[in-house]
Length: 116
Length: 115
Image (cartoon, rainbow over all chains, first blue to last red; front, side, top):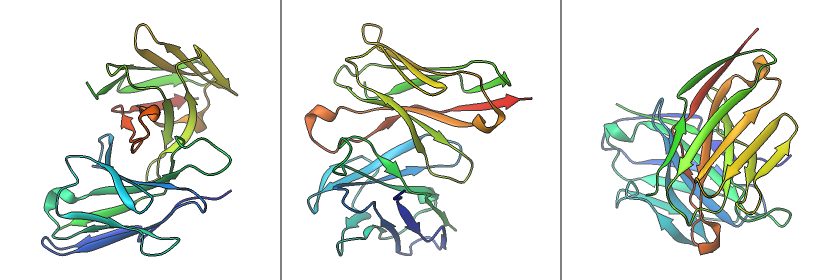
């Protein structure tokens, strides 16, 4: 069964550094998302992306964050200057294949980001 | 108004018992309610979902009950098994707006099924 993949599984970076988290959504999906989960807390929406542009973003998704779909398969989240509070598990999700409704979102395994 | 409240925070059930997790919402625009199961170190996995035009949906041992007037929905796990031990999140979104379809998650319930 097709699945969302994410790399790396764990990223350690120093405060102030830029990081890029990578995702390969399920092929032929049209909507792409980033969520994050701080340890022990609920999953929080960051941004949704459709037709090569952001369709919605949360308050968390400030100017330090950006997303890109550089080619037909990858979807990336960039944090320009990381802060300690950016430490979290970041999940990529995708939805809207031809076979299912646009609202069923499938999540990747996540990238654990640790900012030191 | 965007919050989804989930209870209980943790739940211990004996093998073979029924696990019940409840969620409540305030935003009447929400029209799609999925449940996700998450094992430690893994991403949330879609378990079952319901639209508000039905009051119940069953898939195997998992049932969602939905009460539109009370703005509540719940997950029932029948014949709970140790392999069901995981964190369960309810979520909601308003798909008809055609926007980002962002999911608003509940706070999660840690389920432990004991032998």
